[in-house]
Image (tube, rainbow, N blue to C red):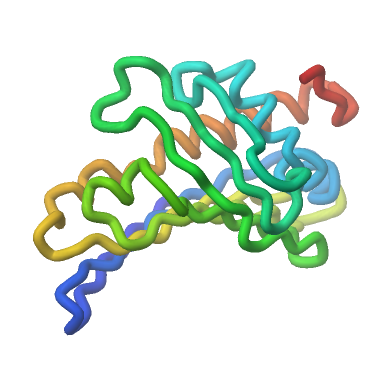
Length: 174
């Protein structure tokens, strides 16, 4: 299920959200063991180097307040790296939000860029993983909103679903 919304407020900035969700045939708590931890970054760097080349933890231990430097693959248009901060990790609601705090799209006229991952329980053995991008871009840079894509996060969700359903017992080699 794909949803995309755009809002233009009187601030002359454009605010938008894009989200996508997929069904995964594992219990929600199993999926959260990856999404709710730094393990997600390790899996993505290892399995999807075309999306994220490297992740360095600059501050923290992967919990709320942690700051990560995400380096994109060489040749990624307009983006080399950014710093993101985990602003929400809610183990009860199974929600994790990372906000870009320096570099990346913020250098291209964005005033806000955050990604939310949610794991929603559907049944005892099934869950929905949902990724949502929220962004705000200055009026003079609205053309750069085209750089916002949910597709890398769909690839990440599909990778994690495959990882979870192929019986890795939630253990990853970093």
